[in-house]
Amino acid sequence: QKEVEQDPGPLSVPEGAIVSLNCTYSNSAFQYFMWYRQYSRKGPELLMYTYSSGNKEDGRFTAQVDKSSKYISLFIRDSQPSDSATYLCAMRLIQGAQKLVFGQGTRLTINP
Amino acid sequence: NAGVTQTPKFRILKIGQSMTLQCAQDMNHNYMYWYRQDPGMGLKLIYYSVGAGITDKGEVPNGYNVSRSTTEDFPLRLELAAPSQTSVYFCASSSPGTNEKLFFGSGTQLSVL
Image (cartoon, rainbow over all chains, first blue to last red):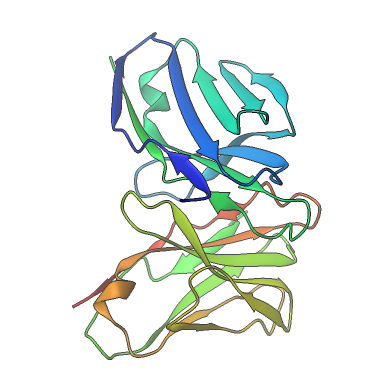
C-alpha cells in the first residue's frame, strides 16, 4: 500500500466549475499537508499548506484536512483555464522533517 | 533572482554512460533535494542534503551519487546509466523550519537508450 494515494485523473471540467482534488494516506503521523501545482514542463510550486486538521482558505482555493479519515482535499472555486495543471499533494512528519512524501499528482484541465 | 537553476534541460544517454546533473540555488538555503518524476508516479526523493558536506539517501538512491561542497551547489551523478533512469529530474531547496515550501528548478528530462 502506498503511503499517499492520489487519483491521477485526468480530470476535465468546464470553466467556472468547482473542482475537488483528493488524497488519502496511511501514516497517521503525518502532520503537515501541502498542495503543489505543476504547470507543463515546469517544476512544482507550493500552492497551500496546512498543519494538522482543519480548513485553510486562500482566494478561490480551500484546503481541508481530516486526520481522523486520513483524507485531504483541495477545492477550487470559479475554476479558470489558468488553473489547468497537475496538482500534487504532499505531506511530512515533524520528525525527519526533511522528507516530503508526494502523491502521484492529478492532471486537471479547465475548458473555456 | 534566479532561484534554483538546473542544467542541462534535456539529455540523451546511451546505456552505460555517465553524467552529472547540475543544480545551483542563490537563496542561501541550507536544504537541497533531488527528486525524480516518472509519469503517473509522483515525485520520488533520491538524495537530500541539510548543509555543505552533509548528504543522505532518500527513497530511491541506487544508481546515483551526490556531493555538497558548497551551500549553493548540489550536483547529482549518474554512473552506468540504465533505461530505468529515464525520467524527469528535479532539484529543490528550502530553508530550515519551512520545509513545506520547496523551491523547485525547471527540471532535466533524461532519456537512456
